[in-house]
Image (cartoon, rainbow, N blue to C red; front, side, top):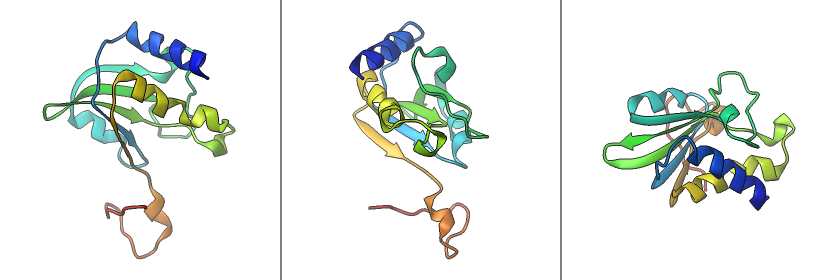
Length: 128
């Protein structure tokens, strides 16, 4: 696993030396948020050696490096899922990679609230 991570890290570092402090995995419906930040570099998952690529329609499949206000961030536009046939090792690889890139805090977003009829699009929920 670590050798695969090292390959992915090297592949990204050949494209950017950006060091994020925070990481955000943008879930369904929030992918366009990446267009609202000050973008420094976009790296498509297909450009990263050994990186798993999402097959879910609507997932852009790229890292967006940039700033939210003055905070350096890396955003994932699209992710891979276990139900796509990926191993758990592959599913968690992006999180481990973002840590190696420098991110100390990770925010995960998703459409989990969509199964509750009491919630409406845009409602905020916290899973604990």
